[in-house]
Image (tube, one colour):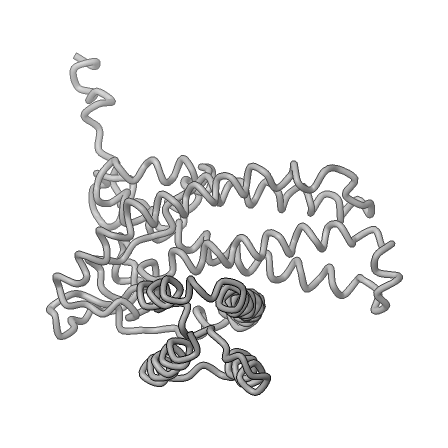
Amino acid sequence: MEENEQPSCSSQIIQSSNGPIESIFDLPQLVVDKIFSNLTYDDMSKSRGVNQDFNDYVKTEMTKGFEKLGKIIANCKTDVKKELPKRESERRRHRLTRINEIYSALDTRYSLLDLTYKKFMRHSHQIVNICFIPGKVLDEFHRVLDILRRCRESGGEFTGDSTELLKEMRDLSSMAMEHYEEHILPNLESKAESLGIGALSFDAFSIPSIKRRRFGKMCRDNHGLQVMPNFEANAVNNSPAARDFPKTMQDKIDEMQKKIDSQQLEIRALTEGITAMTQYFGQAFPKQRQNLRRFLHRFPIFNGGILQNSPEGTSGCSASTSGTPQKTSRKRKIAEENQEEVSKSL
């Protein structure tokens, strides 16, 4: 009788002050956070497929972890730079030089990830709002940071191979960005376009949580979608990617300008070579002038670079080649004039 009076373990329901606990998320928030803190980010990302409650909670924690990672990298870089000497010659021989270079590499890779995912990771519309998906990338970042932290706390320097240390992190992040751009981003953009949602509507704290009462009352926008009322612009503007974006873009602009200058020099050299060859063939083979005229009519691309036989024509062409580019109609008119002059000379 006593055994029959005691309920089995499978039928027991844990009671709390708010009623029966049927799910892990009915526990106090502090308890839930403590349970998930024992998991790696990779394990947390895999648990999103359990149900909608797990998915919503993990989305919040993954994005929080990504934002926290950026702050950790920025603070570590600042602390290391404070310990480095001001002189460049002394800095190269300092024990923290290699550690500082690794932190810079981590910051650069984090900026690339932030630029890749932030378009929809901070979107205010819940339908297209995503979290930072690759949990294994976060785990690898923290593994490298833990190694550097132990080196700094021991007062020593990093004597290993920095390339080997960062190899796994670079490979994982590159594969994650490639997978996102090829398989996830097109679907998000098409979904946002079909709903008429702007792609630059960011909100750093728009991901819903299990306990929505923690974030305040939900409101609805013009599209009838639930959005969070509070918008923290500083969370976006103070990120490492936002600080490094002007410098990164300026470096790309300078690199493209160097390529343009190099190509202009090559075009000028080729134009002068074609001009010299045309003049030589016209003078060396006077009987072939008719064929040369036909060739010029057949390939008008060479007409813009044909020079006159006079020295004035040579200097004029050089000036026009090295000068600023003109409109297409103006170039076409000059090419026709050059073609007529060559035809007359032949």
